[in-house]
Length: 198
Image 1: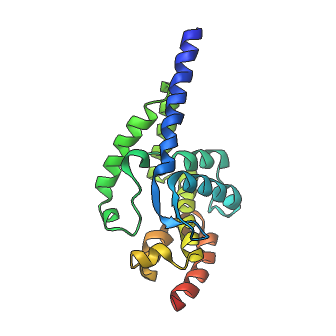
Image 2: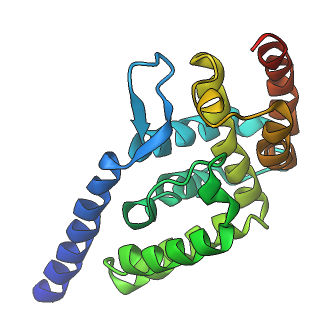
Image 3: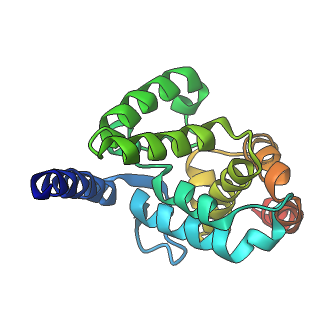
């Protein structure tokens, strides 16, 4: 019995050690103070906090515990697949990106004991499919945080990728308004101001 418990703990430690690599994956957005690019682990923590604070604005009632779990694990695949900025040329081939991320999910979640592997993978698949109320809200929050970062940094990644107001509407607005329409309404006013003078 002790050997089995130790094997389980070793697998969990291996997964958590691997997750530490997420701290080295840089994203295209900078911190709100513009001091440096954010890493994906910081993004995961920040969107989890966004979800906790903004849950009252979900389009439909959500299980915040499940949403927080999604937020914490949704980008672990970037350890292998890297970050693909939503406005980059690479994002225009979502099929290739999805295939690469599924392979990464198999490997990374596969480090866990079987029961946790299956639970985490199912939660990640649910987030990616964005069909349940929890996943729809989680996806919307995942899109809100980079918008705020861009607004706070003078449109840093929007300028770098030559992003138009229409592109923000198309690539971000649909997902945010589906899961948190009140948040998209609030963001739209800020976007009007920024793109009107930016």
